[in-house]
Image (cartoon, rainbow, N blue to C red; front, top):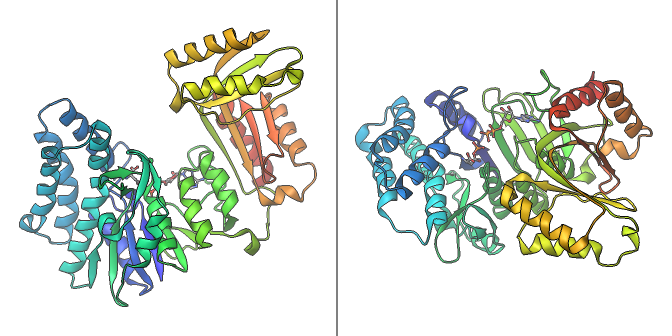
Length: 451
Ligand SMILES: Nc1ncnc2c1ncn2[C@@H]1O[C@H](COP(=O)(O)OP(=O)(O)O)[C@@H](O)[C@H]1O
Ligand SMILES: N[C@@H](CC(=O)OP(=O)(O)O)C(=O)O
């Protein structure tokens, strides 16, 4: 049995849903279908998830929601009408949408999560309606019914292992198609909580593990995973095969096409993943496989960049001899509930790199002041213009001179690294640069290894 996930870009309009349905029906093994909310139909369009966020904010601010409800319903109506569903049949979608604003929630975070989750919940219901209209045996299955339990923040939850015991109990008939909404689960107290954005990939991986699938197919709008972001490098090569850990590093560092957290259930269940194109299903796409099934063809598998970082640079003579130095800094970060991403260090220097999502100006001031008072460094500098380039490849372990090649090619184009981190992971190298140099650095490294 295969678990198949369709991203929002594959379900944005009636014609793309039709392509998705053709893919599902062309293979009887495609029995579990995970759907995202309708995405962008063209550039400039708004994803249904973002419309739902707007709807939630209007409810929170006690504004009139007539227009936004109309706008969201119109997205489902357009798809439903494409398949000949009447407004009467679609009324259930509208009713659920309206009822969202009439329910009570434990707090505004849970309200936001419940609204967001309905992008996928309504789409799964709609697709099940379409299949029934076509007389295809199918069933809408909800996380509540299936026991997909999640823990953590309402808008950044993770799977509770109990879910796998529950999923094991779900019966699927041989000729049946299950339509399952992605992106959310149910907390132990019965409330909706979502994964982080892009999290329908995670649902697909959880179901693939929970239902012991032999393949997790992830359908998107491009021919698999490219060796570099196509918005930075013109027509990059598509990766034929890669390992779980290569994908994990690349998706963590900017390959937004596949969610980094979705790798974990697949690794736990040792289920191969095939990232494919809904609009070109005959293209083999990219296989993501366990390390034991992989022999690298290239030195480098992919190169990516992320720009949403800041760094705190500290210099203090004899830092290396001061026991508890790092502990005191980490305690300050812990007190403010601020995680850090990387911490490269020298004998008298340390740089701490942060994800900007966890910071604001006030917090930065507080942290810097407390570090100044507690540590009394010789130099403290906050750098808010920080990007990280990540170069990943199982082939790097076996090849000599890769770092020299990378650094030389950057140097030739006048890009000097602020930080180099190699060795922590045997299959990747991280380079810190200025934000405005990040895309250029990705292009240079791509040219060096792929052209
Ligand atoms: N390395 C990469 N390989 C392929 N696509 C990438 C890569 N990096 C960024 N992307 C972008 O990711 C998009 C697909 O992701 P997304 O829109 O989230 O898909 P979906 O809606 O199917 O979940 C592609 O259209 C592409 O522009
Ligand atoms: N719809 C959610 C979850 C998701 O995975 O979407 P997509 O498959 O379009 O990336 C979001 O926009 O974040």
